[in-house]
Image (tube, rainbow, N blue to C red; front, top):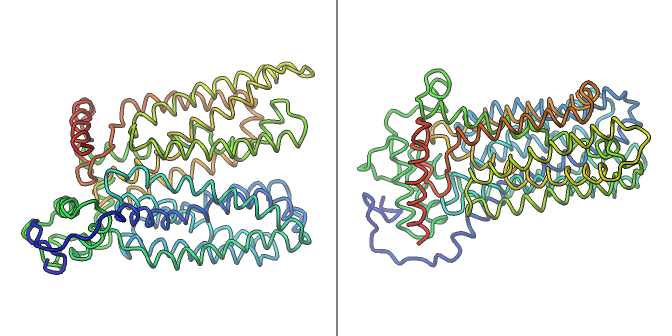
Length: 511
């Protein structure tokens, strides 16, 4: 590759440019890709306040309002299902632009809605954007980032979701001062502005180097890797690893090549992923689906969406107290997600997931027990039980955010082989959104059927099963090049040996 300055993996004599801003470039790419998560968070946060005005203005029933609140995650399944094939066809970067376009159209439709069916159409369009965004942002970041900072950068979407929720709350506060029929429309319609900014900003991003290699554009892929690697040697090594994983011979070094046995636009991926997977791919798929199921089935959305109800059942009668406690939940969630993001590359994915799920189990058990005691002693003010309920809600959110929240997206975006990554990750996102929608739309019924304490004890049982699953099925992936990730899977009994080998490699890389 004459233009890229390498020939058969050997660095040619070139003046080495300064490397100080290489990590900044990867950081900037991760920030831009994660902007989709801010829009997603905004849609979640703004609807919590806008729903009050929508219900009064459009004369909605409680059932209609509940569907409006929770249906976004169900609608997102359409986008999640299409995102993998789309990103293999048009590339990761333009898939992010497409997600922004759906957000833009959805925001305008909801903002100009005149009746319930109209606003549901807007919710559907925005939901497709959610499905695209939740799959493509972590995948793009994982493929651009060097192994040393991949976990940190791939955690950004989870942080940005919480920033978006906060912006939604701020929007609710300011636009609530407008007349009722205008306030909620401005709350929802203003979401079109960040969508436009996202689409414009993404055009300044490079395409994923792994997608470029699959298209035979080795010269362009090397340019991206050179900008995001610490040294030119590392860029060459990463390119060679990607070529090897894509089945491209080492002697093919032209800037543009014809990829041998290339399957275009994801053709044959579903067969290799589901119908006839190798033992390693089957293990990877089970790990991805299991971690996404566990993240949502352990009840995080029940706490996030219904915190005021939980605090009311816990004994906080004042709406002001319920609001303050709910704000505290948001603050704790955001702070601990930042902590988890900062330590994921230091302590590893597996350690954080096990610690997180163990803490969630203890918190849910204590929360379910305290709520049950309060429920069985009506008319009594059990201050210790109230305090325990509020505290364990906070510890549950904190332990979730330090591991299961951000690490789920990091882990599932990096474990699939390059050709299966986009559609494999999309399956995980589909299950994640499905479980989120189910939990969000059934928690009140579940709490009436089992009592609210019983519902959280059920979630505790899910968390315990998830901890066992994580311990048994999930190998450590910290510091492992994406192209070598498949070697960690397929033989459960060999995972400890492979993890030890991988940790030894990390020590070498760190030194």
